[in-house]
Image: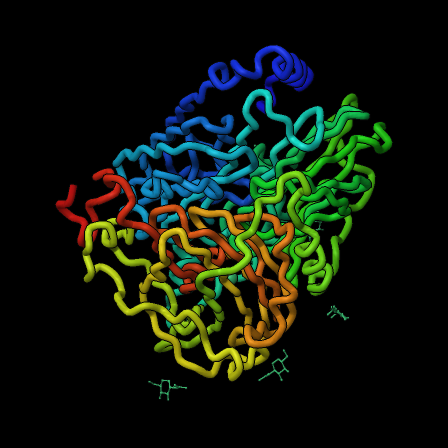
Length: 574
Ligand SMILES: *[C@@H]1O[C@H](CO)[C@@H](O)[C@H](O)[C@H]1NC(C)=O
Ligand SMILES: *[C@@H]1O[C@H](CO)[C@@H](O)[C@H](O)[C@H]1NC(C)=O
Ligand SMILES: *[C@@H]1O[C@H](CO)[C@@H](O)[C@H](O)[C@H]1NC(C)=O
Ligand SMILES: *[C@@H]1O[C@H](CO)[C@@H](O)[C@H](O)[C@H]1NC(C)=O
Ligand SMILES: *[C@@H]1O[C@H](CO)[C@@H](O)[C@H](O)[C@H]1NC(C)=O
Ligand SMILES: [Cu+2]
């Protein structure tokens, strides 16, 4: 539902239609084209009071929220005005059925858009829910090019819950260092990690305490209008709100909460969840959740909405926004000190919440009972010729210059690594609670999946070179997958681990966390012709090679638009 349309009217129309015009509905609710014209440029921004160059959409970071209705076609014309930098924009959670070239991943589905060039993305939003968009070129998304996509249910269709109004909440972490500095450090010898973020942002706002800045390093002004006030959300007493929450953090796993209010989780990555109540929502980069919140607290005061880092020992202050009850001064700070959030190192409570997310009983998408192929994907951190890399089954993924979609469709076999990657690793011999002893290699191989086959993926965590195990949220492009289970320790395909899997009512998602010292199992149907990236959504990790590429039915892909070509081996192709 669009926020500008009063909900009762829509409900009334829907109820009327149910009786009077259900047969006409299909004709009435004609899909629309939604056009956007975006100029991508660097602008000086102070989202947390520290001034920095940010990549913006029409001058804003985050960019505007795209509102559409299921079945609509979204057309975004992107003008790259970055002057010295290429770009590409990914529509996170949109499956791109019949339009694999619009997925927006430089090196996978298109050549990056050159400075001064214009590129048009056109795709159908085929399922209602909450989605996001962000740059998918180098580490550019960390510089601010991101935003949300809200897809409403078609007219006459009811969601399995009621609410009065909605808000969108985009969570980010933020660095004062430029993306260039961050990316260069990760590739340098010796390796320089990006470090912990300086701030957490809620809808693009945070507040860094400028007095804590080392002398004379940049401009920081706590009175700057971009940061002086946190984001404010208004609650009218007694009303129920749908909060569409998305995380596009670069590194951090978060816990989100609203002081004094319970949240009922009802949607995850565009799929209805069997509702469950939480005080704090754990959310990983690349995930979206919708929660219902009732404005049922003392309306004479305001409340803190906060985001806290979990999974890494936090040095970053919490993100803060104000939930203000109607009638109060929305800018008035709540009288309380924001909560500290849950202990950062309690993995068990996070795994427990992950396990609580199953499909709504009325919306279970039946799971194929068995897979045609199983991929056991072990992540290890390796020192490769003095560079610190993440590898999957020994290969650190490197994006080729020529987009896979073009090279695979056109048979350009020299454009990427032809050796098939390994479906498994030494799952008996590998000690996951020690740094990897093996060497890795850098490559650009592809898992070629039989079209229409059912594929299981088991993600296996292991300790990094610092002997710590981290959280890795994995995101699959072009599909939703069933989340079959999360487990502790090492997954053993020969043992009875399969009994732990949920094939009854698993939730479908596009992003799922792999928790420290554990494994995550998922299943998907390889039925969307194209070439799709599957990767850790921690920006530094994918840049260090933590990803794989799947191809399925590329021969079924329609004629490729020549606008995605022009780089590497695709020069001169049409
Ligand atoms: C900012 O930091 C200074 C110095 O550490 C401290 O005195 C001050 O109270 C802080 N301000 C806020 C709003 O936290
Ligand atoms: C800080 O920002 C405020 C509001 O824009 C402005 O009035 C003030 O001059 C700025 N201070 C400095 C030191 O730039
Ligand atoms: C988390 O860290 C604290 C402080 O180091 C420690 O006391 C506690 O046992 C740890 N909790 C877990 C679940 O590891
Ligand atoms: C690494 O950490 C594990 C616990 O996860 C511990 O048992 C092991 O001794 C550590 N190894 C090294 C080399 O520090
Ligand atoms: C890793 O590579 C180095 C250099 O090529 C070699 O000396 C070493 O034996 C290799 N180690 C393993 C465990 O393969
Ligand atoms: Cu990761």
